[in-house]
Image 1 (tube, rainbow, N blue to C red):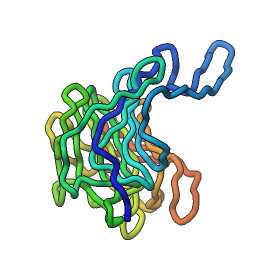
Image 2 (image 1 turned 30 degrees about the horizontal axis):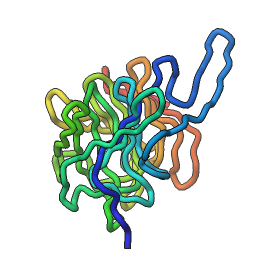
Image 3 (image 1 turned 180 degrees about the vertical axis):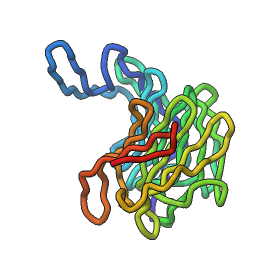
Image 4 (image 1 turned 45 degrees about the vertical axis):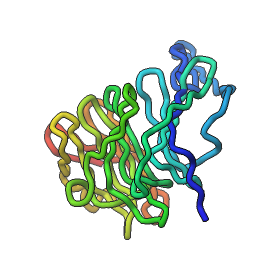
Length: 236
């Protein structure tokens, strides 16, 4: 029987002088140094296949491969790496998800999409989490958004949340955008056969374009694709 962790929110603030919280880069001499933070206090526990995003100088983590989460976010705060627990509202069983969930932030709000539930069924609910009020909101589900999936990727700009790929009965290569202002999903033009359906792809926004980097399409692939939202075109 799988056990569910208590509902809650955790916070950890990233030191402002660091790029990320475990990787410091000195551009003038092109040197890099990894360091491990001493996590003081009670933390969320060991995990993998979770999601992580940034809001200001705080890093938020959600989900786990072996621990089901009931809308429980971990946020890390303070320069001395001290987690802070903030209770979340009770959630119905349908909110529970574990592996393959993703999230991204726009402003002070975190958006959580997809993943698998306690029966290993893929989900397609989109939730928002307001980091100021600690409030969860269900934004879309069913036919109002992308199909169910897990092991997809998510990124965001200052207005939209993008999801790409993932797995359900097969591997997907579709790109969707959620407009946080108009509160609606838009499916972007298909990537086509040149970009095979895949799970676990890298997804990022740079120079106004959306970049799909590598992933698993039956085997690990090393191709890179980009999509330009301005003109609706893609390239490899």
